[in-house]
Image 1 (tube, rainbow, N blue to C red):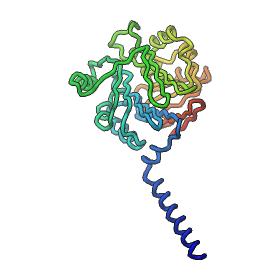
Image 2 (cartoon, rainbow, N blue to C red):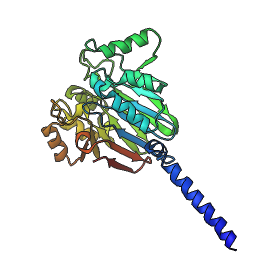
Image 3 (tube, rainbow, N blue to C red):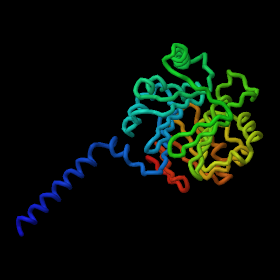
Image 4 (tube, helix red, strand yellow):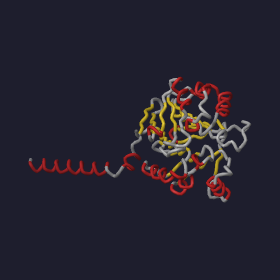
Length: 294
């Protein structure tokens, strides 16, 4: 009998040791497998001044923008820590450096299946020119996004593109106004991604889509700048929550106090990466939860 219990105790100890070792492979393994079946995660990665947003479930990983070049190593390390090895889609909303800056590092470190942007090159950006060279030389395949297009991914991740519209009247030099805008739909949950659009684009979206803009969560345009987040636009979107990606102690003083005042007046809670660190949203397609680093 003693031998039997000694055998059982040995098994328990061995299993406990193995379980601890398996869990202790590091945060990379832990974070990579932490998503449940049917769960979608949206992460506003803390990349300082800029946008880099990861959408993923157990089957798909999508990166929206790549932050600034000076923080590109931080972005690459963070994605690898999260267990990302391939990107089913890399979407660049526009070619300003705080959205495009890390693109070369991303292309060099991850298997990018599909690359999307609005097709507008920034003549003042060497990185934008480098991307264009990769495309012209056949090294990188581009798919140009515009209003009316849709992308569908595994497990019912649906993206509907609302801008740029082909006849919006905005000159190509207006990179912000021509940002890619899309609505993520996952079950009953929705989130509006707005790049760096400004008031004129917001007005155009309201006139074209009206109540169809309504979304559960809003990724606030232009880092909470005074150029964006107009009252009429926010009333049309009616988000339950607004998320802002911006840097701490930056020269632009984002987010703008008046913009935050508008959100407060409309009783829309706001989370900001410069204050809250990395922001993680998880949804099962109905309810959602928010987690922050700070």
